Length: 167
Image (cartoon, rainbow, N blue to C red; front, side, top):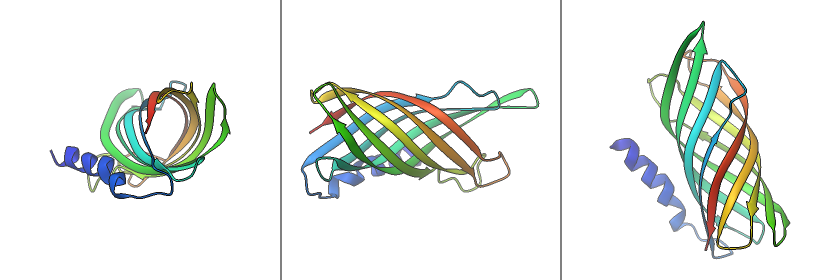
């Protein structure tokens, strides 16, 4: 229950932020990678944010992450809630596609449970079409900074698929 409350707080936090532009943004996406055998991260998440200008935006992001491990032939997994922030810039705007670059960071805020980590993220995302609801596809790289001895640090490339709403 506490985790759900924390996620709700992080998702609603941008509602009190006032920006130069009144464009409010919501995104829901899943991301993952399949090309590694020792560690495969998958996540389902959402973000709320504002378009500060016509091209610059900030988001508060929440994810439910499932991290799959294979150590010495033994498969295991770790699941957790993750919260973060990112900022981006839309460097290509057209009637068919908007392309933006993003930088972000986040943490799973664990104290003593299994794997405690922070992440640092960079990605390129394409928003298809010109309607209020747009499909989104993204490619990126994420560095997982392990905070305990449960696991080592990892760098992983990922694909993200979802949809976004602009108000």
